[in-house]
Image 1 (cartoon, rainbow over the protein chains, first blue to last red):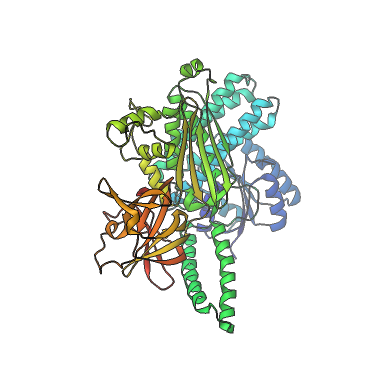
Image 2: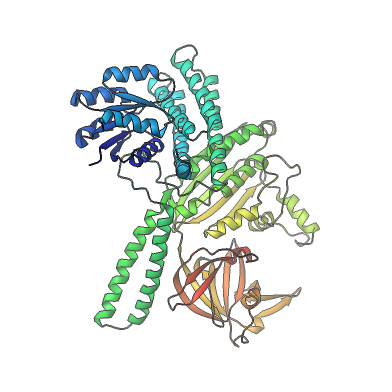
Length: 121
Length: 503
């Protein structure tokens, strides 16, 4: 069965783009969330194999969402999606338990490689 | 990103950038009112950040760079290196307007001037399950529905006065089909806000270029219309608004002398009226120079000496192809399409336009939009074997042809109907019909559009139908008033005629 992924980003544009990249790479997009709060709820409800997480979102940002998800499931695999110039925030996310990061604008190959590494497939 | 997907991403960018920038504007206004609210700054930052991300993904480098500069200005306030004073807010608001204009220019360049293709779902972030549907699939569904409606009408025709079970089944199917038709057409509805929300920044940006001040108000953006109608609106609206800012609104200096507020006011007000939506665009500018235009018409012999121009008459003059009153051709509205093009765009979707203008007080254009596109109640007329349908909304009445009521005035045949003298238009002549000679008794259809009436002479009138009108591929030389094609319940094809421009 294809690994199932939850996409968290406040922009439909970005969710569509990530979703296209992942489904193109043979992964299943299990669901989408558009805020940190929704990301935590959907993680608990759907138990995905991996989460992509935007950093700047309304109603709880990505870093707080990482903390909440890791508190619920210490083995959660979270891939941060950051923009240029957010190194400080990426470091914070990794300390909170995120496993890796990709930088926008996305290079499909780089995203797929990071996902593959995280899932150990 | 693969280039294959690009049009889809551009469509998403169009929808999302517009709603983000409208939200940015509202957030800034709230922030200015509540300056201690730290949440507004954070929210604005998030909005800009999202916009920048999309711009970068589409390689809109200039836009991404500009957003970054605004982010930097925002950062200075966040870090406390600069106070968020009124001057600063003005800069931010101007920047948001500039960003909106940049977005629209980029979108237009990618979509060839039309609106974004296959507009995806409206960008609502309350999380009701939203399904994305391509417009083309929806159009196909509506076309299928059209043939079902036709089949239903045929069934009904056979079932009339018949109490057999088959007839009852036919009636029950008809009722259900009505419900399905309603639901499918509802799927195509979208809020006017998708178009109206992006207007204020563009109007303000335009006013700045022309050294004018303006406040823009929008009301009724939650009203919904068919997407097909919505997508034809941006060009006509921008044309009318450009004219309002360029020719309608006076310069601050002139306004001051006239005792008006320095900033001109433009309001866009949408409201529901029966089966239509009225979209009123008004400005509090100088009004249209009715007397000067009337003088020109009189000089050209198109208006009787001493006659005045009514609002409708004025609109008819303004909408004449190639008409221009601008003494000076400005960069903004001196070129491009005229009001005649605006009118024909609106007519294509069954909308009409009216005008009111008062010297020194301002001008209002009212666009009457149908709520729905596609299914039109129409009158079927015939010339020999050919069928032509006319939108029922334009039909004022049917009268019998009476030779004694017709007189020739200046070579033009006029018919007196209820004490009003109407120009006669013979459908045979209009369509260059060469067939068997016309029947001796021909019905007259009185058509009314834009406040004008004409008497249309047909061979026969066959009754009313709900016609499902499909757009036609426009052949060269085909007149603009042939607006679509329909298949009637007896299988006859028919052309839909919108004679509003002929009236």
